[in-house]
Image (cartoon, rainbow, N blue to C red; front, side, top):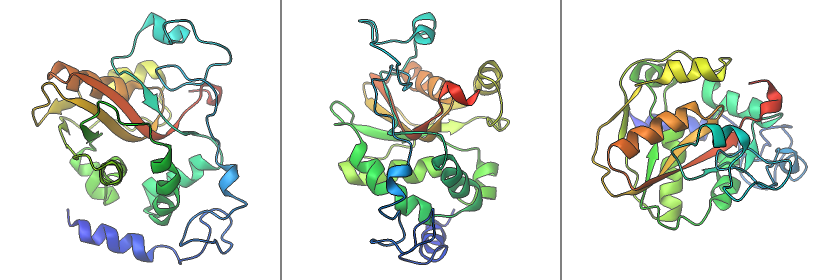
Length: 238
C-alpha cells in the first residue's frame, strides 16, 4: 500500500481549524474544541487487567470475576476512553469513512495517556486481513502503533499476520468472537524474549487481544500488554 496516499487523505479530508464533533472552529489544527474535548467518555476508575473499570476495589489479584474464571494472557489493557457516545461515532467515522482528521484530534490526548512503557521494547499492531485493509485503504491499528512508537522512540514490529479473513466482530457476542478468531493470527517475525505492547483501535470483548497476545506468547514473547483508544463496557450489551 502506498502510505503517501494515506497521509494525503489525512491532510485534505477535513478543513483545518474545525472541531471534528461540533464543526465549530477549534483552537488547534483540526481537533476537538474546548467544549467538546470533555465530552470524550474517560475511564477514570480502577480497572481490571482486561481494561474494564471496577465498581469497587479489586481483589489482591487485580482481576475481575470474569478474568478470575478465565485469566487473560496479557499483563494489562490500557484504554483512556470508553467506547461510548460520542467517541464511538468518531471512531466509526475514522475507521469506516476514512475521516483521518479524527485521528489528528485523538492522537495527542491518547499519546499523552500512554503508560510508562517500562519493559516494553517494541509495539505490535493488530493486523487487518489484506482484503479488508485494501478496501478500507489503511489499518487504523498500524497507524496508531506507528504514532506511539515514534512518540516513545520505540521500534514498530509488525510481528503478526492474519492467516484468514474473519467475519466482522461488530455485533457478535463474546463466544462467537472467540470462535471467529481462533487461529486467526500467525507469527511473521521473531519475538523471543521481547516485552511487547499490542496496539489496536478498540478493545470490545477482548477476544482479539487474547488471541493475538497468545500467539505472541506462544512465539516466545516475554510479556504482552494491550494499548487501544477505547474499551467497550458491558453496559453496552456486548
